[in-house]
Image 1 (cartoon, rainbow, N blue to C red):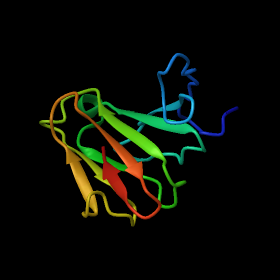
Image 2: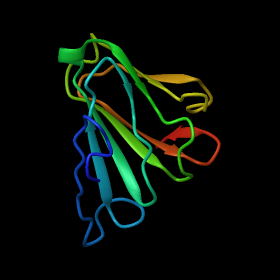
Image 3: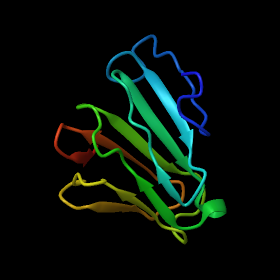
Length: 123
């Protein structure tokens, strides 16, 4: 990973023993560093976790990749108070459950998004 994610933190977590992601449990972790944050595109067999601190950053938007790999999974997790500082998740040209955006508006909530090759779905 060697810095390819810029100023985000990348962690590798081995999946062993039935845990982890769909193809072996490799997870990438990014901390949103602004209230307008674009998520990286997970590589094959990876899942992405974006942590968004709505208490520090305020209301904002996390933009999903426009051209991700089919079967990509991204989880956006609020680590603050998104009931007061809503987090908008933008599909970046791909629908999310039939809409251009979706909202995280409950404190400490998380949504996981799965890309089927055409659209994002909340799972």
